[in-house]
Image (tube, rainbow, N blue to C red; front, top):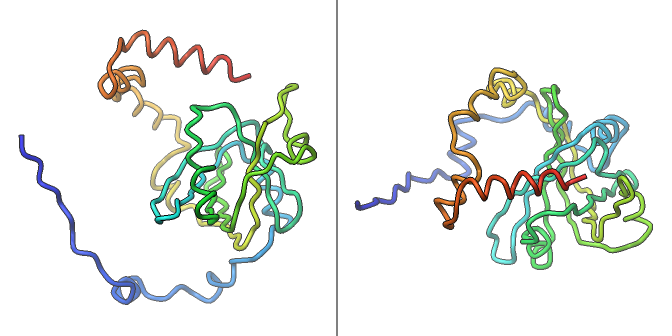
Length: 207
């Protein structure tokens, strides 16, 4: 079977603006350079975020981060700390930050339609005082990512409303997909049932 690569025509920044128009002044004004009381409270209630980084060549990566609500700590109004929790050890974000320190974060709170976006620069640290603040159930991270905040703002809930992400009925969509073990077996080989058992065992060891 021959696969034909499809590459639609790109549009220029000027064409994008011509089609979308200009944002209202109040929308532009919502972007701040520090974490205020509302941002701090949102982060304290957030158990999940996505982290976007890029390597030295500009190749992008976006990875999930999650733990108990408040696992990300606001060190001050310009600084966040994100603990590194046990995972697959690929460390893509750490590798990227070594070559390009730009970072973008998207915080979610279950049931909340709006999200919080944070952009800035970041670097890894093993500072004991920082790591101690993110200890959970006698487990302390060995590394953390420190984010120097440049831009913070709340993003409206249109995307989450359209996606129905918090609607329990949407969870039925997962039943239409293969299991993680079946997908891994198709990509890398192995017994799907054994891979599913391995994943479940790993998940049970999280805490």
